[in-house]
Image (tube, rainbow, N blue to C red; front, side):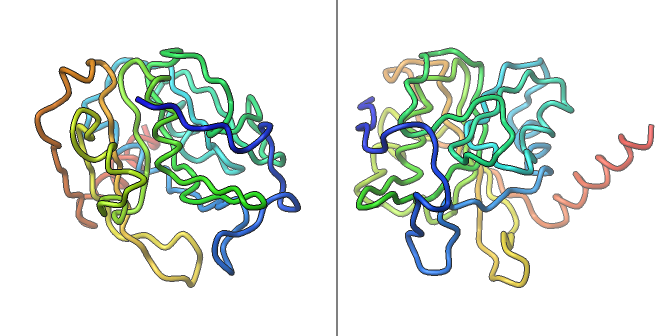
Amino acid sequence: MTQPQRLFQGDLLTRDQAAPVYEGRDPLDRYYSPSIWVDVLLDVLGVTAPLSVLEPCAGRPLRLSSRLAEFGHDVTTCDLDAGAVVDHHRCIFTHPWEARSFDAVVTNPPYKVRQGNEQRHAADAVRAMIPVARQFVAMALRLSFLEPCQNRVDLLGGPYRPSDIITLPRYAFVAGGGSVSVCWFVWDTRSSAALAPPYTRTHHITQARLDEYEDARRRSACR
């Protein structure tokens, strides 16, 4: 797979350095996922054994990484946000990540980030992470990622198609704002391109099913 070009220089961005892609958006595209999405992901994939997991866009609340750690996984947190309290300040797009250095990568990446005239997309994050994971890469992305745009057609079909797409109930990332459809897109990195899955498995999580995950989590916390 072609590696992304190094457009952003360095591993840190601050609000002063970044500019929003769209008016009104957070300059660092920081929109944090609910931790219950981790429960869904691990259950659908059947993950039971502890894994070494990279969360390269952990953000400030550390929601996904904290929940992964509660399941017993060894999580390394990174972020390009200079204000995030993480293990390492590294940019998902430009850091020279070591190949196959983690069992899995789990994150909600910036959908679009711009610094000056340079812009990167979630597809660039996927390409940067696929060589890093020994087992799978899971990214929480908008359902619209499925649109056949030129910048990600290689990630949706052919040898690098996702192994699984888990559609979640609509979610409002901003209080009082509109909700969006989000999916876990999962790329199985255990096989070579020649052994890629012949089709993508789809899973649909209704709000009722998500409520069941929440109930199970509460019961487990009370034990």
